[in-house]
Image 1: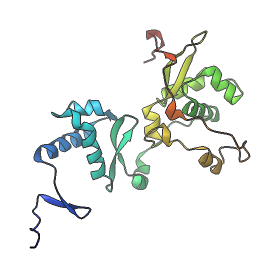
Image 2: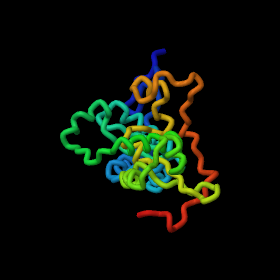
Image 3: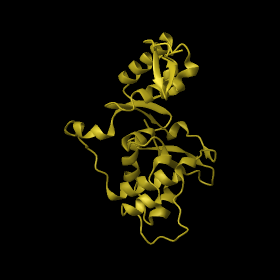
Length: 225
């Protein structure tokens, strides 16, 4: 007996016939799509779930929408714990004439940013110990103003020094999904950013494992708006 013909509500997936999403699910995908396109900044799964009747399924819907846009001119990207539409990386050259980079960080700021990214949460004294030179307040202020760096909390040691870490804006600017996507030692050495003759046991710290459990939360006086 021959197989029944496929209907317009079926599609092929890996040789098997599977039903397309229900009308209700398609509508939820349209809602997420509309909200994300209109958003001025990345939105968390919880924020997006608030627009859905079945909010508990938001994560699965977002992954489905991400797959839908995988081969298109815009991609749905996860940025930390948030989501946003971004131009496909291979088409970014089309927008170069419309985008101006007004900030040029000094070498000191770039070095400080790299130390914060890999060693967070890190204090100013720890940054200075790693760089071997003092870090000016102006350097940290510049990084805070770019919104690539934020204050993470006060370390539970005498003096309760402030610690610093990177933000979702940092991930977004450098097209990183998470801190785990930062270049490793091999990539940095190939780019000439690390000494080729490092000790064999040298390891970069893993910023993806950074935790705030040894920090006191920020006081009201610490928060800079």
